[in-house]
Figure 1 (cartoon, rainbow, N blue to C red):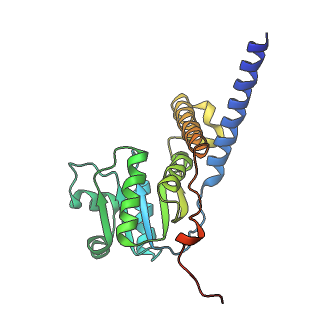
Figure 2: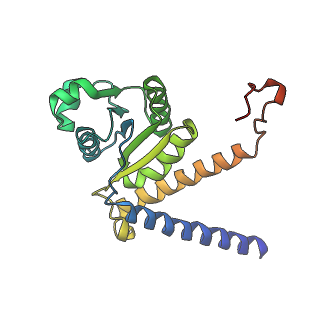
Figure 3: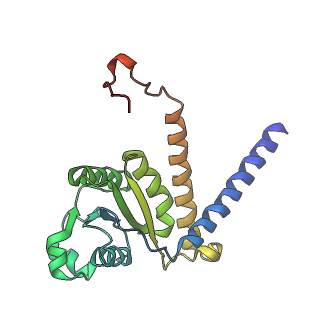
Length: 210
């Protein structure tokens, strides 16, 4: 009986968390206007709306450059230009394409390398609304010193307010929620490990008293 009760409690907690997750996604759009940052990064996916949104942010001067992470390796710059609907002079000068990333972890690594190469300390992150929570976890884990401003784009095929009414949308949301929980669990586990200790006073650079 105790095992069954514990299982029922676990399922209830999981379901309440799912409802909270769906509510968070539903309330995340329309996105607030982000502050001016060093750069803009967009994580590619099935929809081109996020690419257009990221391009508009760049054209509005919200960032110095735009990284499109996870571009199909067979796509050319001209192909991507047509999808983004960008102004060509801005596209030619200020848009970088990342062809390495194949998943969200890859997006985070690709973005971190780009931000480091550009010496950027703040980024606007553009991706689908349901994908944003997990993306922010991965990006923050990869580059904790960079300030990230989420700019979620609504997913037309996922009506987050009534997600259970559509089988495809419900499945997408549940799968994403499970992936999100997995990343939360990973980060919690890593924090249980040994932490870097502060360097001894003798090893620290000497500072003059102000």
